[in-house]
Length: 224
Image (cartoon, rainbow, N blue to C red; front, side):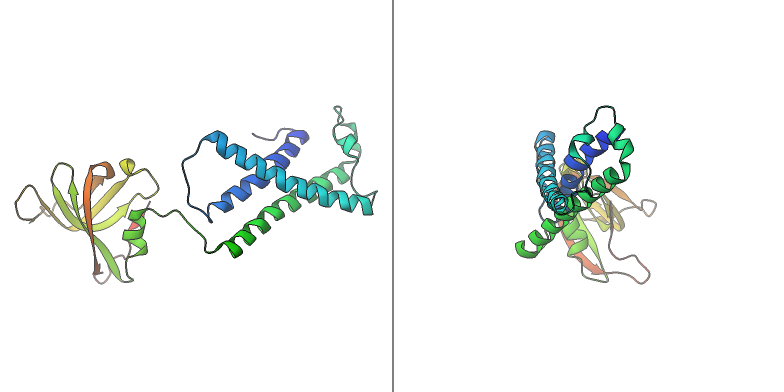
């Protein structure tokens, strides 16, 4: 939804933005899960309504103490927009205050949940854990990969895709490169071949080894 008038701006601020912010922050506290668009949208809208009600309650208390400060709520829904045009400083100020309060409530709620709910949880794939997180400093990951067709490749991990389904991931191996088929011994690939691209769907098993990096060689592989 792209705001195109003051009313759509109000709807966006009240019904989408605070809940969207809270949902994005929630990804730091929990691992992601596949869910329907309806479920995700409902969660965002409900969170936004909760933060909006809190913000409006605070503004109502301020209005009770300072009656001349907030705009007339009935005037905001004037279909001709006359009230908003005549009292735009108060309207803009009220919208800004509501937005700040609602988004502030989302940030505060997230902070409280993190503080009292333990450590932040992030969704990390096994590839990221093996090739980057668990790799000791000054080392590189080397793998022995057996493909579904029985071919075995070994080499250093140069890069990999980590945020896609396993079938869509790709693993790039670099020197020293070896391969074998069946019961044969591993043999070095010709020096003209410096990269091997393997699709995640083709991998049957994978063994990982961490070796000290050669001087001048890059450290951890790139995760895309």
